[in-house]
Amino acid sequence: MDTVLESIVGTLLETRNYTFTEQFLDQLTELTLQYINELSADLSKYTRIQRRQQPSISDIKLLLKLKHISTNELIQEIELSKKFTYRKQLTSLLDSLVEEPINEQSRPFFDQSSITELVPRLNVKPSYIPSYLPDLPPDYTYQSTPEYMETLTDLKKLRMKLVEESRMTETSLYKLIEYDDIEWRQKFEQELAELDPNTSVNDTTNLPIATTDAKTKNSEDFKFDIVEYARMRKQLQIKRHRNLETKRKTREENIFMKAEMYYSPYSTIEPTPEVKKYFEDVLSDGFKNVIMSVRNTEKLKEQKLKRQIEENARREQELQKQNESISFNFPAINQSESESESEQEEKELNFDASDNERESRNLVVVQSSDGKALQQLNPPLSEDVSDISSDDMDIVA
Image (cartoon, rainbow, N blue to C red; front, side, top):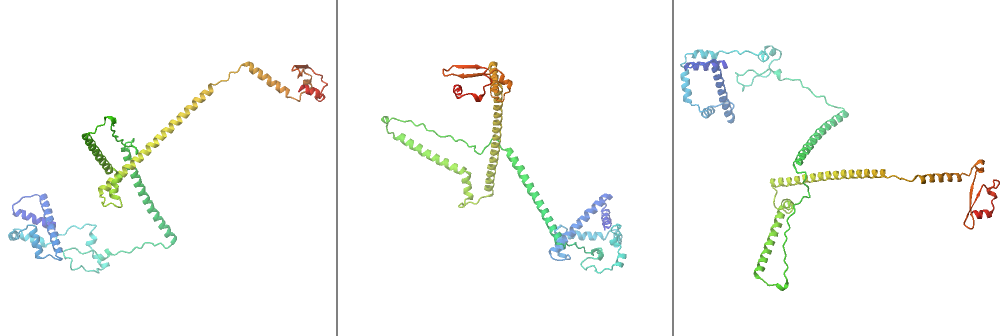
């Protein structure tokens, strides 16, 4: 069809004494095909709007009118086409069928003689399909062998399959929740990083306190002045008005009073999206300030504990150094006397003395009634401790 149209376009150009190249002829043929396709598509649209399958004369008139095509010009072109020198050649060309090359992949759809012998056609082409359109594919093209899935009949396997599917669903949901949580935390940390780390919840602005210089006047010098009294009354009235204005502004600036206007059970004003966004931002900023103050408090607490631990360690080191510097410098004489006394006590307390030790020189100290000490050296060895009389015991005592 394209070759025939290309020949017709070339013939028309030659009759008008135009010279052209092959590339120009191809482009002009493509534009002609595009224009014809647009005309046919619009005509089909108008036909379907009128609930018809075939276009009527009214549809064609509407198409020509909307496309700004004059019927008189078409009639003139038809009359001119009868005078073409190549008219007979063109008509013979249109009557002859041009065989287009068949692709190997599409050959089975055209060469159907052997297929129709095996599988005869059961469905005939419907009447609403034009005759110039190619035949439909053979019937076996739409035939298919049904494939059924293997159904589970074992209840145990069926339960395991259901549990596995539910776990897969839960895993995917948990991943989505974790991803949202991680994304929210990253965004929240980024917003916290933008805030001032020194801000705190308890930061309040100290309002200046108005002070009045009250001057006391003596009762003796009192003199009523109506002008001064009026001025003071006016100042008092202005002060009251200023206080009321300050309270009103404070009430308007208070976030809880603003929230009461929209979210109180007795409120008559519906919150707008801007108001909701404002309160959400206020809550978000307050929450961020609380988090920042808590973190700053924790940091200060850790620093305080660290300083306290370092101070305790320093004090312990100082005490240890002081204890090491203390030394007990006792004289050598006292040390020798203490050693001799300890040796003497050991000798006196040793009751299991041998015979040789008894023969050694002993010293017995006896105190008389006059308070004088009597010494007796080397008492007779024949006397035993059991032979001491009671008088002697009294003397010893």
